[in-house]
Amino acid sequence: EAAEKGGFEHFMLKEIHEQPDSLRNAIRGRLDFNLGSSVLSGMGTSARDLAEIQRVVLLGCGTSLHAGLVGEYAFEDLADIHAEVQQAAEFRYRNPLISRSDLVVAISQSGETADTLAAVREANQKGAFVMGLCNVVGSTIARETGRGVYLHAGPEISVASTKAFTCQVAVLLMMALKLGRGRRFSRDEGMRLAQEIDAIPQLVERTIEQNDRIAALAERYAASEHAFFIGRGYLFPVALEGALKLKEISYIHAEGYHAAELKHGPIALLEEGTPIIALANDIPGKDKTLGNVEECRARGARILGVVTEGDKEAAEFMDDVIEVPACHPLVSTIPSAVALQLFAYHVARIRACEIDQPRNLAKSVTVE
Ligand code: G6P
Image 1 (cartoon, protein in one colour):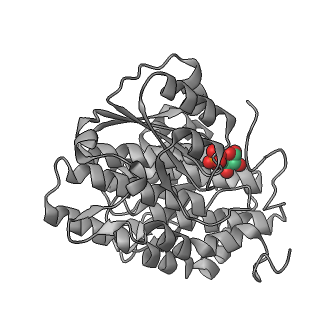
Image 2: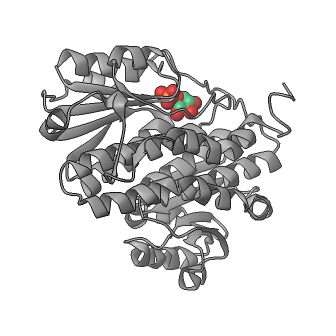
Image 3: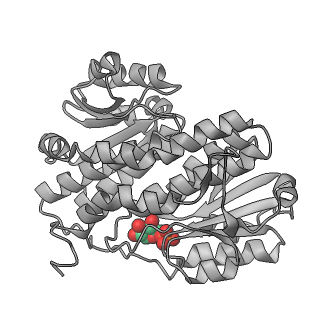
């Protein structure tokens, strides 16, 4: 097993470090810089079919659900298509309104999650255009959807998902680019976005270079029993994912909130030193998030901010800072998530937790 971990102490740390390569594999050959679009042959549709799509419904559980939440913004903002995310178990039992012009994207690393599979069957039953976004080749969801896009992230062993998440987001951005090019994007705009997507592996490399710094920061938070992650817009799903990572592996009670929701409850829980992890990258909504950070500080919270490299203004609001490279706002979800993966990992390591196999959790949930 030590050999399989390639010199890393845990599979999770190995998989975090593999992300630049996983992302390269997920992206390779799928961007067309000439057309300013993406080539996702697995979507298996003609331009005309794609033009008929009126809504995108994204399904998933756990971390895959969080990737879907980023996808929701991507399809609406890049492709002008109404998009919504549904938790797969909710979808399967609620008698969802689905039509033939709906594109249903089932997101699942393993391709075996029981609720996501049942949701796929329900969507097939209702005649939707169903697609899988899986990592495991030949998995049940990949087979039953019949079309889709593989992540090519490589095997993910750690129960807490890392590289699958960032590859899911990258693939969703490429899907949104493809649909966007068929609708509102000019060739130039498409090319610019394709370049931004192509640069993702380097952005992640630069984030991972901060591993030692993040490990040192983690020392200051590892004794906490509660933590709140906040973000807005594209970074709201990242706040949810950051909190999930921390709670899964460190057993710290961690909650992700939309920054605007703080005032509607969680702020009542703040005490001297309560950690707030604020996603405050330089994207629309940053100023509002900084306002919320200020409110938390006034109540004694300790703030760890994820900010854009060189953003001194944002850094001043924080007690501690992790910098991520400047990039397209939607793309920034990826390096930000990687920073929070490393943070969760180091907190859990300091707390001597069972990182790769947290208690009560399974890699693949094949029962309801
Ligand atoms: C389990 C795993 C998570 C994963 C979720 C969905 O809870 O521990 O890491 O995000 O299942 O799994 P899937 O394979 O469908 O992405």
